[in-house]
Length: 217
Ligand code: MD3
Ligand code: FE
Image (cartoon, rainbow, N blue to C red; front, side):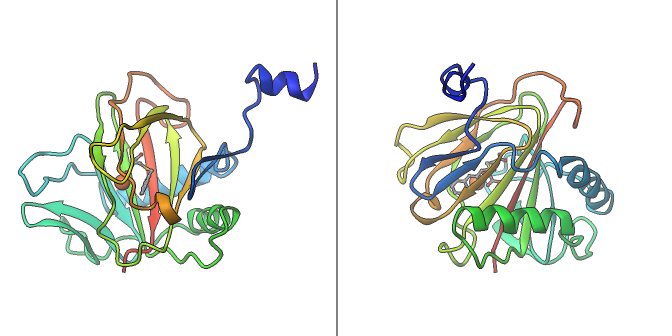
C-alpha cells in the first residue's frame, strides 16, 4: 500500500494540520512525553488539588481545575483572573514541570512562535459529562502571545467558533497526545469542549486532562 493510500484511507493522519489561520494542530506531538507529563501533573495536583471553581454568575464549573507556574487562572464570585497564590492553600502554585515547559516551547516554535515564555499553565480535568461552554480567553495581557494546549487521556470534541459568539462552531476531534497552538488571528476566537463521552483511557482512566500554557502577565 502506498503512502497516498494510507493517507487517503485515513490510516495515518498528517503530523500537522493548519486548522485555521493561526491555529496549528500537532497530532501526537506530546505522545512520547505523556507519561512523564502525567507523572509531573500528579505531583502538581498533590500540592494544588483539582477543584471545581465558581463562575462570577454563581455556577459551579463541571471541569475540575488546578494550575502550575507563577500565575494561575481562577474564578469566583468576584470574577475571572490570574493570581500568584492558590486561593485554597494561600501558597504559590507549583512550578511548571520542565518536561511540559520544554514541550510547549517546541510546539510554539513549530508554529513559528519563537519567543513564547509561558508564565501560567491551567490544568483542566474533564470527567464524562464535563464540558466547557463557548468562550474567549481574554484574561491575558498580550494577545500577540499564543496559547499552547496539550490533550491527554479520553478523546474530546473541540468546538471552534469565530470572533462572534453567534458564529457557527466547527467540531474538531482531539485525542491523547495532540498539541494545539493558538495564535495570531485564532487567538480570540470563541471555543469550547462538547460534553465528554464515557470511557476509559490507559493513560488517565476515566478522564481527559487538558493543559493550556499561556503568557498571562
Ligand atoms: C482557541 N480549554 O482552558 S484547549 C481553556 O480542552 C480552554 O480544556 C479547552 O478553552 C480544553 O480556556 C480547550 C484549546 C484552546 C485553548 C485556548 C484557546 C483553544 C483556544 C484560545 C484561543 C482560541
Ligand atoms: Fe479557552
